[in-house]
Length: 218
Ligand code: ADP
Ligand code: MG
Ligand code: MG
Image (tube, rainbow, N blue to C red; front, side, top):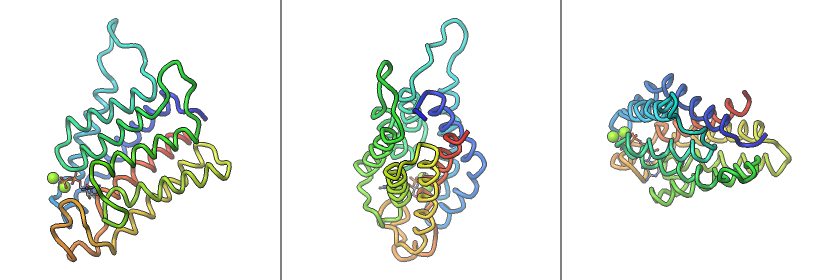
């Protein structure tokens, strides 16, 4: 399976649907160790992403964009619409994923190429947020997701199976944030009191990879 515009749009729409369904849980998690806005931040952001994707139609509608453009636009919209830490972090990540994909006219990315794009997304999160694995952040779900994705591709998996492995890796990574003490973001202000709670951002990263698996399967 190649990474085409349909897959990129299906992924973003699946994330928006998951956020719509799970925003209360994300906000509850953020109420325990943050300021209780992670669900509403992402909900506002992905609602704006859908509006941007659907764009103006009619005779002046732009030509269908490539998958890189879809994801770059998603990132720019998150940056402009989400004020919290997660907006710039996910925004930069999606922009990096979009920029790492082949430009229109070039052959589309295969499963391995898309893994490189996901790696660029993680690098963007780490460059901006300076979090290390174990700091109880988005990085703790994205890292095992990427590892599992790459391992699956190395073993011969195509994109649907690799995305499924990534989703399972991200979900495990999110659960594994429970015993960690936060060292970045608002939760770090709590010191040891951040222990015993699942990180909201790692949890939304798990939603993001589960949405990728759904989009790639469908
Ligand atoms: P805010 O903390 O500004 O209210 P959100 O509630 O939307 O923003 O997002 C909080 C999540 O952002 C945290 O649960 C954490 O996973 C993630 N996060 C915060 N700081 C960083 C960072 N420096 N690097 C990676 N992820 C981070
Ligand atoms: Mg918050
Ligand atoms: Mg906030």
